[in-house]
Length: 147
Image (cartoon, rainbow, N blue to C red):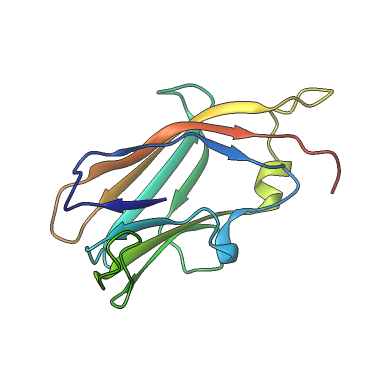
């Protein structure tokens, strides 16, 4: 998912559907990255909370982490090319990672397991600026067939 702040200054409304509790979410594959065009947020702080109900207690919390570790990492790529215009605009790549053991360890799985439909908020605090909402939506975790 990419976002061009020069065109749209609102948060992202995106529902996430995770394939299976038996695989990690995001991480090195880059499949779940958010790309913020034209802004360097490599020094920003990020927080993502996933709860079973909107406004509920966090079931999974992600905070700033090094890439490859569960959490949120952000890197700036000065040579990033705009996907529509083709211009070099630079971008911050926000990479979430939730490990397989976190999903498998949740106590919320029914017997037999059914998909968990939860909710998330992703917050960003740019260096020297106030915290703001970045993305929100539902977060569905499918039970999967096997490991």
